[in-house]
View (cartoon, rainbow, N blue to C red):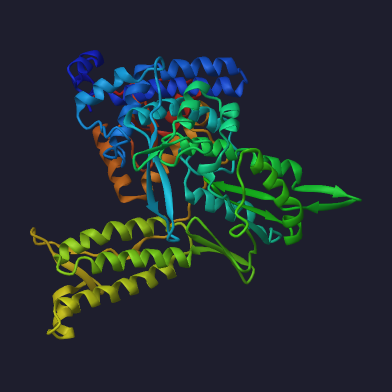
Length: 553
């Protein structure tokens, strides 16, 4: 959106138009978040509280909170009041309602969603107002959380992903020849539902009154109200961050308790203890099965007990690396002395079941429409696994998808022969045969994506100590984003558009940007991404300059 074309914020708000210069407000919030991080690092906790209060009372943070809860997947899911903010007028009115004074949290609406094991997972759906309030306070809590969380915690954290967690396991744990060979696969029994309210209220660096209301709001199921005595509801905007903070300290505690290396009677002993946490899933490595059973597990149980949590005795197992273990849909196993990460059998099975179900549920759909249904599923699954040794699995998946499509074609034409069916639905495109493709209205062939066409790209793991709210890490994250954009076709397209919009010139020195000069992605004063020379990028950050876009002719 062009900032110059926007009316003043108060004018838009009075007119019932939820239309603002979002980049400007994102910058305003980020500046406060950076100040919170600095105060937290300096252990000025009263300053942290003061800045948090300032942030949650700011107009920028309020409209961003409302924007978040009205544009995500759950925007049309109401709470117990049945209200959703679907119109601009409702969103503008909601800005006035986001106040600390007089705020009372409403009970949660209980719903159940199926789990992969056939059981159901309970969710607590807050009202739109409560969701917006949580999103508002999350903006104040997240900078603190990012500063104090263990380095090897990866779930529900900005700029971190499952790929980072898997890479952390591979690099930090199993990359060396003398690596750990035994792993605790940790499973917490009902993590979100059992976290101690007392522990959260005492230890979470957030407004205690507001936090207590969310925790003690209660549940409404089939018209009946029940109190909540423990847990933070799955479905709440702030719940993942609270869960991360509840599990924070596990890795550092084990590292301190069982030093990686220590000398006993003149001999160096390596306990090989590493902890990787992703949400409520975690693994802990050790030198032996006996060491993990007798020394590590009791410490983990004591750690969990303080927070009102328990390990599932049935699902918490100790595994040898030669047998392999599943983590986040991927299998990590040592083959003849070499550790490989592949898609897990269970993950592949569930993906193929989903594909077959989609195909069977649409027996009479147009071929073009079926391809449009399947392509996002195949693309998403393949992109998730594209950082590991998945090429063989991709071919396996493509083979089974081809068989499922053959069956779909035969059911549509039971009286037609094999060759007639193949000529109608499968084509030769370039050097490839048996391509499931359909001609569109524009006369072009729409192809079914192949999983094995996905390029395997080794993931560059985020640095453990990197904090997206710390100004010292701005250069690192900008470079990382530039590399990420360059990896994808859409990202390269965006880079080219930025380059052309800037008249192929650097916004600092106004000299030409080309292959020889190189380029870096920079986030300017306005919050917009810009291309500048590497030398200019370094100088901008070294002297903390604000980049102003040069006028385009």
